Amino acid sequence: MSGPAHYLPAGLPIPVGEPDGLSTPYWLGLRESRLLVQRCDRCRSWQFGPEWICHNCHSFDLTWTDVEPTGRIYSWERVWHPSHAALKQHGPYVALLVELPHAGGVRMVGNLLGDPRQTVAIRAEVEGVFEHHLEADPIFSLLQWRLKRGPDEAGA
Image 1 (cartoon, rainbow, N blue to C red):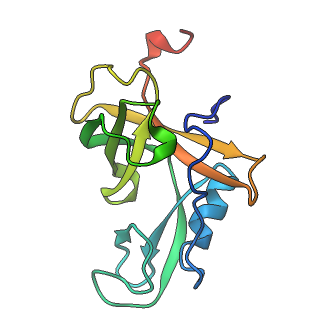
Image 2: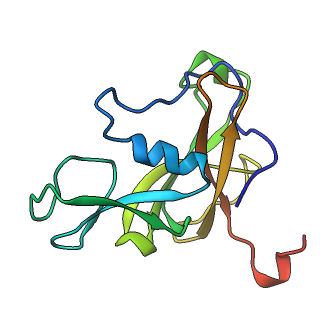
């Protein structure tokens, strides 16, 4: 899914991968509107964030694998205190811990799009929204989250 507008205000630091290239496939995948998560070729376990070694079997044989950008809210918090000066006039916002069922239940942190005072529930389904910043230097993309619409809400 692609979002038409930018959720985050200008002035925040541009997210970049580590100098050793470990997370480069993740960031490049986002630029292509793809969510990539590491999977071990030996034991088939999933993991996120990026590591050089499998957390389960200690193999170095990890592959970046396409995952459907849908999940469930595992935890959340409505953030009132700005964590960066650029967010001073942009609060509150909702930070999520999203569990990805299509990736062995790994979890990743993200922002919930929409009204920051909306009702949020643990286990609610969310879908990924790729936010592309083509005007930035260097260009980058983010994965944001929104509550998944039911079949009767699809056209709303």
